[in-house]
Image 1: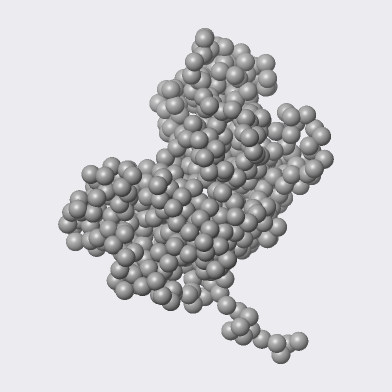
Image 2: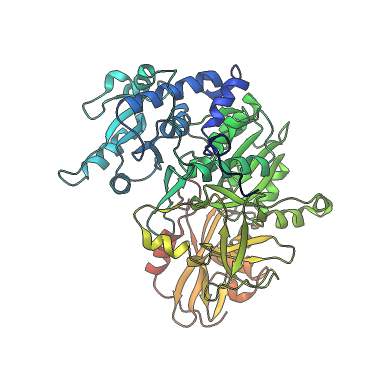
Length: 555
């Protein structure tokens, strides 16, 4: 068989952009996007993406150029996930909640040539551009208008000299018969995503067409997404390209329900109005649903995929009691989506609800198309015991792991090591049944008197307190023990009597070893979070540090 070689017919580059073409053929007259009073079919979306890609190409944006987007989950944001790479350029979604200084740094680091800007982000992008050094190349700006929000800001007539044109004008000028730019190689860069920076400064993660294709298809298979689902966009598309689901929903001809912003009542309203079947979100979204004032049990079940932070078992239980079918996974910006999922075994359905929730809180096993996961001793690289107790660093290898960090070979080599593994920086255990469970980020492990304390485990206990809305645990310096757990807590609204610091500590002492019990409780109205719902522990660590050393004489 050695004479059989690769031919053009059997070696076309893999790219998820082809999903849009198929959707236009198979589901052309079916709804693709619904947003307030706007509704498109898949044939409309396909045509609009081609037109926009054509305009980008005719204006000189091509292979290797970075095109950035700052927008919430609107139709334009969805279309840009296809249109930018269809022009040959590299797509860079930027968190719309970042401050001007950070946005300025990211635009300069990526050498972005063009930025699509939502109408409500005009001020922050203009401030970010003003922070560029003198004589530094500046990207062109395109305004995304939205008549449903702030008409005085989104009207085309409100354009200033800072913006070259509007999004819709670029769409209108484009050629609907444009032959979009196919990747020369499936290893060509397709997207550039910056990490959230919860534990360090953001890094530019580069993914290729092949990697995005793989994680998109595998995510659909692993979540068992059927044809033509109704998908509610509660997960920011700017976060790891919405875990690959912009391309995935096109592949199955689903309906994208777009939301600029949302809360619990809005989500329940959209579910009833549009017959939502699927949605994604961090555990904070689950918490939002369970604490919503109109959280009546659903008439029809809704599949919800959660990841981004280890979800407390209590929150999982409360969410499922409302009729949501929760699936739990694990991934990173560096994997482009979820590559580990808590694959559910039918026999577990016979277990008590509390035990089911505990099992579902585990991250799980690798998705079918991923190569391998393990938990290793970071010093030796050897696998830890599969006993659910031995802690090590989570390592991964598979086709959707990033190409590397942009302009940062040192950080790339530190995590993509010569031993063939991607070192995640997450700490976890492997259970005897082969299921992975995250215990912490490596920087979030608290070392108290020589004992390692998982902040996640302490948080899980805090969430079982009926008065607690949110909880995060970090290390506070201690004169005797080195570090002790410090818990930041927000309480639920409408409580007849709010618990004191002593009440929370006593509650914990009844449910965990005394050395793990928080020695300090800090009450806050709301905990600081990233755009995807991860609690900003680095901020809380700084607060705990500024409080000075505690003086705990005994556990």
